[in-house]
Length: 507
Ligand code: HEM
Image (spheres, rainbow, N blue to C red):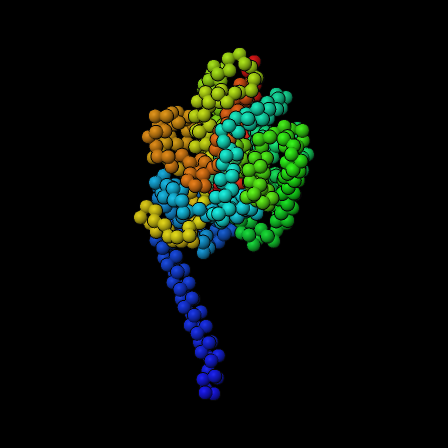
């Protein structure tokens, strides 16, 4: 009897030890399997994040930094799936349409990869970075109708007003830093349409929201171009973190103020929901408050508005700017765009396009698509796998990240002849129909595809047509030939150096 009582703690300790050993053996076996499967995929390992990665990032050539590294890397494997071990993390890069389809066409692959963590600090559970399927699905259901064609139609005069402001600013300048000028125009457009307010970004660069917005983007840029800051640990110890977090907090407070103002107006039963005397009863925020009263909390609404602003501003600024650069360097293509616009508008000089006018801009649409092919605003998208996945006879183990390098896909010579040349004819209907849907994925694909693609196309057509109707665009100083154009990944795709363009009035 005495012996048995005395032995109980020993038996318990033994059981705990056995359990612990079993768990450890299980984890070890899983990890060994993860490493074995990872090593079966052709590729490289990066064991030294600072100099190891930096040495492999090209400083010269058309694609620099991480973008250049990825281009060289996938070309080395002729587009077949290839892996990079970054310390103990496994990332498999895909570029071929049939491989991309396996990932983006699979509704179960929902989670974004870790490289979205930086954006998640600001966007939280907003659609772009959400990792909770239930929250994402509920929000997507509420937001999708707010981007319906009938609502987007009403945005054309807003885009036109901002494009005209941009066109007027250009008039007085000899050289225009195109990314800066277009970025302010798309920021104002998205604040107008998402929140129903003006931040006067194009009138004065003093707006607090504008400064915080650019401060956040600059820090994202620094993180994407400095491998040591990609590590959360080092970033969190740096001064940049507090600058980032303070700017992000102020942006959230600003959004919250707008939200509360609008809610008060709805509470007071005022039909006019505008702030800043801007009549915008169709802004996304208004629609989400009205529709999602029961289902979206204030925190969720804030995340979604910040998400729409960040996801909608940078991307459209990038594509509009690259499209103008391409037109400047391809005068024959610009001529064709101008002829198309002249035939649509005839003598309606400087009038706002109607929605029907936009539908007739077929050649401009091909120019935009070709720009999206060569310069996709988001060149790399990623997912985390919860389960093993077979791609092209290779097993990618659960726990890995999959990077879809769509910049590489869009420049694959098997899909596009002379892939680095700017040729809108690539999007003639007969050529397009011969390619897989997954050979052109600037807006992603599958359940997490871009919710703003129709918005983007309408906004880009309005802005570009407004500028090209008024001006002949040509290369500015400092970038005499396209051979000097170097692009890189920051938060989105950007030229390495500022690009200036000149604008000569047509009439
Ligand atoms: C030329 C412009 C644009 C491009 C190239 C673009 C590209 C993309 C891509 C590639 C994705 C998928 C990301 C992934 O799979 O991880 C995406 C998602 C998203 N985009 Fe866009 N986008 C553009 C414009 C916009 C605009 C104007 C808005 C909002 C008004 C917007 C809002 C979003 C949102 C909310 C998501 C996340 C959707 C979800 O996960 O449910 N985008 N975009």
